[in-house]
Image 1 (cartoon, rainbow over the protein chains, first blue to last red):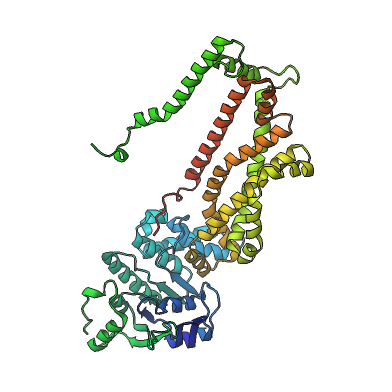
Image 2 (image 1 turned 90 degrees about the vertical axis):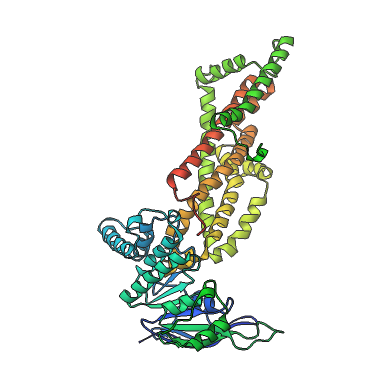
Length: 266
Length: 273
């Protein structure tokens, strides 16, 4: 089943073309990683999926219907930072979605509703390994724990699509490994469709079932903004040959961690 | 020898140093007062500490022969009522206007410029207008405080709301929140500690406007008393009143700071992550 479809999508800001002619079909349950050099429009594309930015031309579909033009509960998101609410404890953060849904006027749950929401939230916190930190405020959590919390918070709404915008970019390599294991585990268990941008090519290869590379094909030095980026590679992962990997690496340029990486050999 | 900027006093010494300027000021006053009183025992300009204490005791502990009130406490109550009412209304107005102008683009375009313009008007310049419009009773005094500090608080809160990371607002929407719910559960709780801070900083101005309006038209109040007895050069009343007002201002400031730390433990030690 097609979860997300882009039909000849363009994004322009006045004269500046950011994305040109993006065509894409993503099936439910795919884990799509998006790489590209900075300024290549991968974040713009993600923000389009989020509904924050509207395409200037073309059409975006979610489950066959036009993409809503504002963020909503069918698309969860985790940003690199500021994804959790500093004034709520970890538990409060995870319970927030349910409070919004079941208490339209005061946004707070009481009594039996609160207890059931609390139990669900605790279960979710356990599953991302934060059961012990339920009462802590985000400022008391490490960067990795904050991202776990942000993921837990997003998953509570059972979104159709989970959007991750360089979610592990600010984390230490060791922590990043743990986070990869966590997100893969959650993805396998929930069967959710995931889009993740990263500037770390290896991360893109390791995590996804499908890798998209955004890049500018045409470039005019006199008018650097005249042409936008498009999808230059769209690779099902698991059987990438070394040749392709090197090509992509050259087109994207080394990311932060890409320097010491060996090509994935199958 | 470490550089001067790296040398820090110990706890006890720090407390002593903090008290030192107060002690010096007091000693200087006592010496000056004593030398003036030695020349002329009836000199009113720099009264001795004893005569100030006597005046204060008379005003605070003995009912006035004319009205039967304890003048000092009646003045304090009148002033604090005006101040409290003015500050409370200003904080509420500032909170509502500030959050809504900060969050909703349509309201922002409509009100932000107006509030900014309003905050530029010198409040004391419109004091006569307030007296004409609202009479010389309590209302005009409270209105002056509101006029003086509500726009300031509103602008401060608006700015804080605009500083909230846009990611938070998007995240809340992906959790299914409506505009109202975002206002209630994301924006309001995060600006509450800022509101206490803004109110704390506005208190100095609020006192200024209170005393100014009491000086012009009142029948009781701390500012009224000071300006009343000024005619008789009654420094023995004025000085204790000034100290009392300062002490009250300090206590409010202290209480608001403590309230912030108590009610909003997450505020202040937030990391940027």
